[in-house]
Image 1: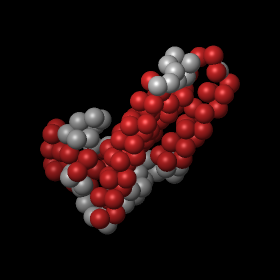
Image 2 (image 1 turned 30 degrees about the vertical axis):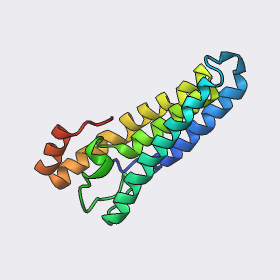
Image 3 (image 1 turned 120 degrees about the vertical axis):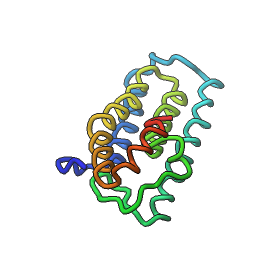
Image 4 (image 1 turned 90 degrees about the vertical axis):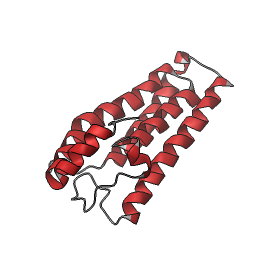
Length: 150
């Protein structure tokens, strides 16, 4: 993993979550949807939380690290990892997108977009490189079989 990056993805998730709420209060006129359509964000958030917690529980069940800079002891490919190579990150982005819908503010969409690019630039390339070095052909086969995102 990238040894220079020691701030874990949840830090960025919470920072962008806070950023979304702050944007909402500073740009209240940028609302693009209103209730009851804003309630569509609730199932999106719940789906994101479910994926996130399910993936996290599989790391714990398999006694491997959840830290992007840690060294995994097993390649988890079951459950949500059968649909996405990065279900925890997908969960983060879904939660932030659900927030965008609930708040109904077009500028809040910057939060999930920022999270996506943070993950794509600072974490995923290094994680995937490390996983390939550790698990070799097994990880390459997994990459060929499972999408990065949903």
